[in-house]
Image 1: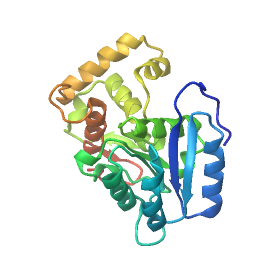
Image 2: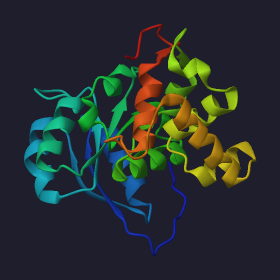
Image 3: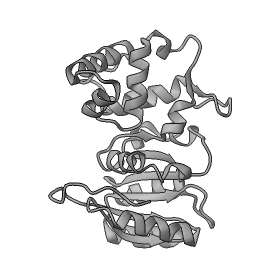
Image 4: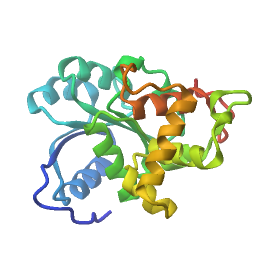
Amino acid sequence: MALPEAQATEDKISLALVEDEDLYRDLLRVALSQHPRLQVVGAFADGETALEAVPRLQPRVALLDIELRGRLNGIQLGLLLRRRLPDLGVVLLSNHGEPQFVASLPPAALPGWSYLLKKSVSDIGALLRAIEGAAAGLVVLDPQLVAGLRPRTGGELVQLSPRQRQILGLIAQGFTNAAIAQQLVLAEKSVENQINLLYRELGIDRQESALHPRVKAVLLYLQESYFQGTGKSSG
């Protein structure tokens, strides 16, 4: 789980960890602390302790195991922490691919939530995109989760071109326009044009939407998809 170096001049993202498996929590804390872009300010084994301590620490992002032992699960803890820290980013860690955990959040509360499978934590790129996306108020989904999403028959995503759906999937994984261009071997301007067309097809108005257009796009992506891995609806 060794992490690549980042530019030392960038501001660090402060993190709080809540994970009830002692060994996994320690491994995650050590690995994240090695990255010069990140700073772990606290690690907790249960939601109740974290709810009391995390607001005093003022982290930018909280990494929360969904299946915590005790009275609070990770989603409940995240919602309670957001009441006290409205700008807090939340990364949910799960052993199961269940996209409805994110899709069921109130739209007003959705910005700044990311969803990552625990088995993807070793993918450092995915982990950093989830953390940085949450800190920036975006919504980032696990790459394996995105790979299992399929458009609903007759839904809004069907009208998108295959390239636009591919770009939407990369947006959902937290890739920037420049990173999408690199992934698809396209000019960044071409990616920007495709995203503008994508927004138009999905009826996303940059001026009128209360949500960031990328957040709105990912929310629609979840609402208009089903997860092939379980056959369950994500809406």
